[in-house]
Image 1: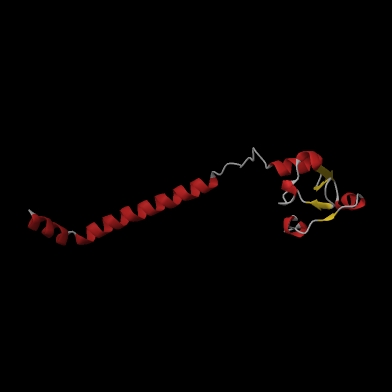
Image 2: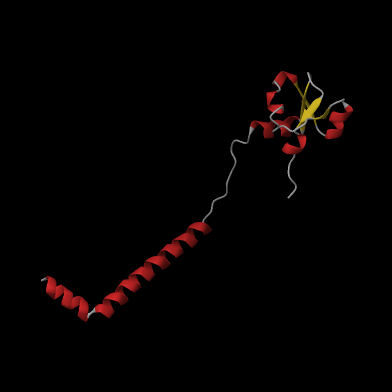
Length: 116
């Protein structure tokens, strides 16, 4: 029986190779079509829970300082996050903070938004 199979393979070698090639090419094309179709069906991303600092900066101002300090910070600054809510002072501009006697914190440039 094994010898019959070997003879069959030898006689039909080119047809077997052609059949395997067609099947492989079909699978590859099918995979590509799935990838293209998947990438075209992207849904919009909705941010449902923005960070508290973003919400606070929108509600209260752009910069935050402390009543116990003379520095003002971006809301995402690690120093700003340490200021308790009852000690926070919010400013809508750098000029407003400076007019109130506050100066930039040492990490101010690190947390400044990048203009791309």
